[in-house]
Length: 629
Image (cartoon, rainbow, N blue to C red; front, side, top):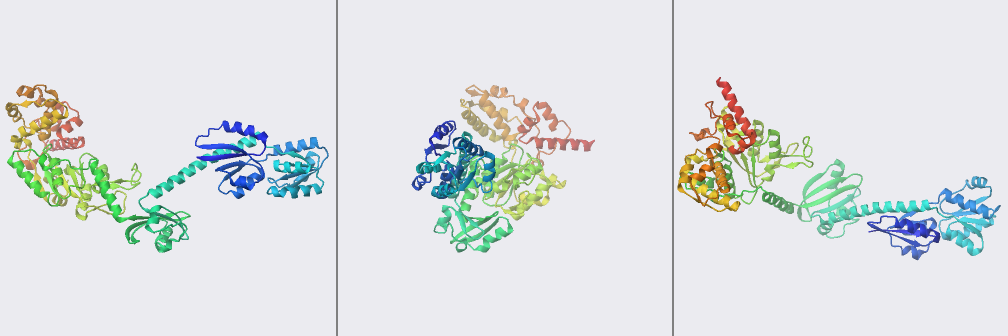
């Protein structure tokens, strides 16, 4: 708390000062008064305050002897001086006046004042109370019979029997001085708070921090620096600890310089930041600690969603073909090569991707997934690679870390990679070849260790033939390939999957788990399941929510109205031609959208794709139809 002390030199001022103090909102500081005049050494030494309001020689004495205190003077206004001269002339007409003060130098001016007031005025300037006797004697010898000055001068004159008039401060001068003290107190409080905050920040930093002036003298440091260099560093020369040539380079270049060096036997990243007009700030960061922090950050990011939740145990199947795919995927998980998952929407591509990650040596590292069709090209690029501060209009201050960096050491899953633009394909190819990325607006390459799993639900071969997908990238991402089966090709899994989903959603919504009759599965087997397992899961949840019967049969399934809410029963005869654009025989997406009664966004969700992808595919169908006309 800031302490303010108002020195009251004479009793008449006390009530004015007290009234002023009572009117002040003193939140955050204390303000008191002390009746005191003169320059008593012990009294000044005993002052316990940050700011003192005083006048005359008392102010000068405190300023000289207590440099730790901010002193604000009560000024002697011209009005106060003239009022004292007027009183003197009235009480002692025709007497020569001697004025003793430490505030003004009237040399060459006293004659003009004499002419103005109609009586002679002489002036003597003093610096402390010990000059008063000499000044009074001098002015008395010059013919002065009455003296004008402050309280200490008047007390001295009274003691030796000389006439005197006390120059008193007006109310405004006193109130203004106190207001100035309040303003200074608030500024000092802010300054002290900032200094304490800075000190706390420095001492709580995990890195050694040293500020050095241009002469190489340490002007500030924190506790970690004292520990690193074994001692109190203030006022020491940095050259005994760290070579001048290293930090002088940063001052000369006027730019931040980072170097990796061995300091005190430790491998350090030394950051040298020039301080304009002062010197340089040196930060010594332990490389091993940086690596631990990096790993911790990545772990925390994983805990925020950048993590694979599913394993191969979550793939429920009795089908020997699906079991063979699981075995193949498990084998693929043991190597670090790129994998391409091919399958219709809802067939479990991300489930397989997460399972592969969790079965690999990268299981403890991040799993980052992104849908390449969900974002426009420029946004997708910034998401994947990140950007530097100011890289483009609207860029987040400080830049942004890209998904490849977040996935460092782990796996990145690029869903719907077939929708990626050719321009971005070239940049992805470079990541695969060079194992490094460059942020948008950046000028340095950042090494990344990432395993890439891609997925598509379209015929990429056809895109390659049409020049819409780079063949060199295709070979890179498809070294290992898994073609997932649509649900209609492993209908024998419907009972186990449907039963599991129903139990799961009944538990989730706190509903009773019903018994499902075999006839239900006979009915479900008659559906083509264009949405595959995702569609089956949706109907299982709908049943869990809508059904109240203990036993579920065909009647309860009929209430789900599957045919009315399904997007249609197109079937894919050849898995190599997955979801190729439909012809104009009535199974196109636009017709399905109209008949569904859904919005484009909801229809896209039903398909398990983004609205952007839906639009692209409808445009592709339109182009094909136009070419057939």
